[in-house]
Length: 275
Figure 1 (cartoon, rainbow, N blue to C red):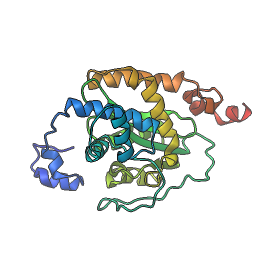
Figure 2: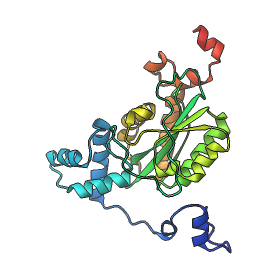
Figure 3: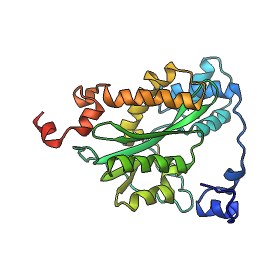
Figure 4: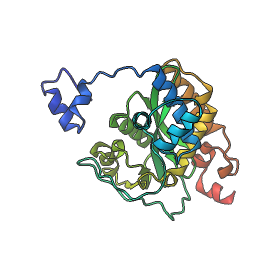
């Protein structure tokens, strides 16, 4: 989105896009191999014990013979975009100019496709390095409507994933995300508001508010990611894409009475009611 050949200075371009000017000039340094190994293990531990914070995770790593300080664990967790998931009072303030919306799905019966969509980002380990996966999911059918990989958690790739879902599948009544800065910025919320889509956001650190996406992450990681060692972003994209095609079209879901997400999403309402 930044055009280095444009007459408008890069700083002004960054300001108009509401992104940090420093991030435009920053050249990322490779993550040390030791940190990558710890991050891969933290990812598994976080799936198993989503309530574990940096103190508990440090203890779990220490029990496995990994000597690491709690501050280092916190740093790696921030880089991975993970945190302990539990209900707690909100003591942080949103980024300047970012609006936090209330959670609207509690007590609502989800009865049809495109009633509620949700979106989230997760960390994907590779043989050397890592990427982030963003997914838009239909709550009723559990169908993955769009997805993208990125080497950073910048807002642009989240907006692109959202726009792809909207272009392919119309629009939902309600769109739910967490309170990450990628989802609270004007570019993302504006794309929803301009289309008249009601915005809902999880309570801070409350994993149950977006439980279906959390279940999707578990399926993707245990059935695909942890069985591979992607050598490149291209290989990760191809392999994850094949898995998501299988997930949508062939993988039966107990919560859908053995149907696949595609069957639940595309079946006409009268036929679904008769069944």
